[in-house]
Length: 176
Image 1: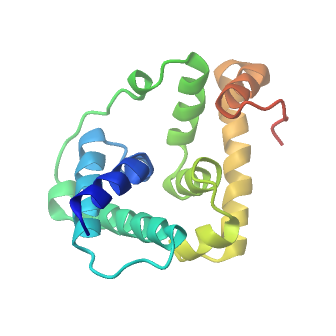
Image 2 (image 1 turned 90 degrees about the vertical axis):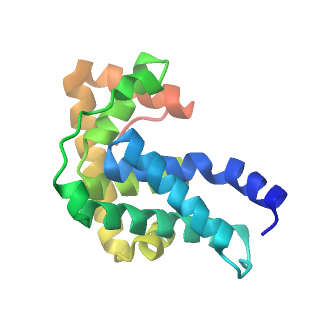
């Protein structure tokens, strides 16, 4: 891959790769390390991808695998870490509430929410990326939505949670 092409792909996918890594690891430094490792593998990848969808799916799969490898490592298991402040990353209070709620979910729910709503993958595509059954993905999305609704209601009532979602997505739809 030529350097100019790589730089364009890096700009295109860096936020996606970082968000997925952060979703799994909940640590800024680890997410940055995984993102760097993922893009190094991407740069070294010799075979062209048939289309951008396959390219993005490959990057997501490599990112998820790198996160799992890091979590299984002895170094990772035996260290003490301080939590990063999530609020610094977002300017709007409503975004803070929504992102904090998403990141407080268990990993299996965080990942499907991120891929479905932020990366706009279908249930079938998420199933292929994660290696889970489509029915499992649908169940996890449903449970994640219920958990998010409950978390946002606890933070300041349903209206506050609804405002957070409207701000992030620009819609007037109701949470179901």
